[in-house]
Length: 425
Image (tube, rainbow, N blue to C red; front, side, top):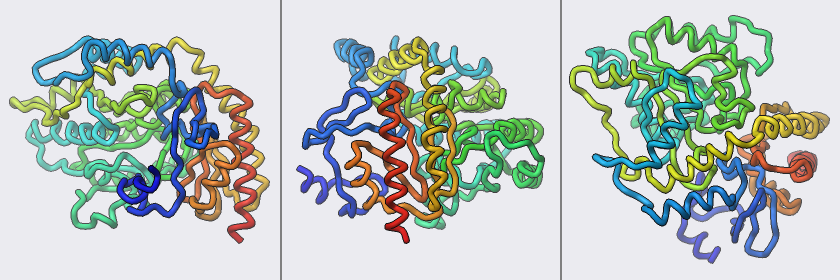
């Protein structure tokens, strides 16, 4: 079976014939993935940050089974259903009160596409044809579709591969302040200069609040986000917050923007929305934004086939209920405390540049780019699944991980990075 996979199936960010070994997963339960050889490994990645409750969760299984007995899908054009309505009520109840409208889509990238459309249509529908650009932080990541790619980092992203095709946007320097940095206005200087000089052509700013994800796993000061909000308001620019990776408790707050005590004009969520069971995302916005979009008889121009899929919405409802009724804050604080202590040991290794932790996110940044083909088997041999990238070895474990299981992960990271020092010489 793996031979067929290698010859025919394309995998994320990999050549048609993968260089690295592919591991076959037979089943998953709790925080463990069971491989085809019977070996069980601890998943430190929450399947790209989505499986916050772990695998094979009884409550989510039951929600999926119950919904399947009714209907797995129905079009959302001209029809609606209970699962979408209940999920909308829940999402509106846990996000800022200014957010009153929800657009459901089937992936995080598409939720960003919808957010960008909202921003452009908001001004265009009201007769402002000048605002055709988005301002974004360098080192950001917002998805792989064309609109989303256009606001990702122009250097480490995919701009070079699509030069001359992607929409040209405006970028400022990446956040240079750590989470607990004493605030200095110099941290916002480049952003401020860009928005002051280009606000007449900027429809929106898009940022990942407090934590930049796949662009570099940076954790920055909420005060920077607060100043971004103030400048967007001052210059009549919409603020899009991409909480696809940070939402639903990952940073220690239900949503990372809560650290800055601000509200977005448009909010994107996904990944952990269904607890990692099904692909579902949402774009939330205010009444003001929707009134602007619909000015002069216009409507928002988007409508995916699987919009508000009943099966995904039912599982998302159950996932949110499970999260909100669990001691998730206590669990995330415990994970954070353990990561600070146990990953902190990595600082003694000469190859380690920095260790960063926030909530259930732990990052070990190296001075040298990692060798994925070498590291992956080393992690597997230690009973864990860790998927490094660039020069970053990081984990985002499920919230239900035990202290012993987390120690297995952090010990493996220390040992593998220590061994990599010899390989990298």
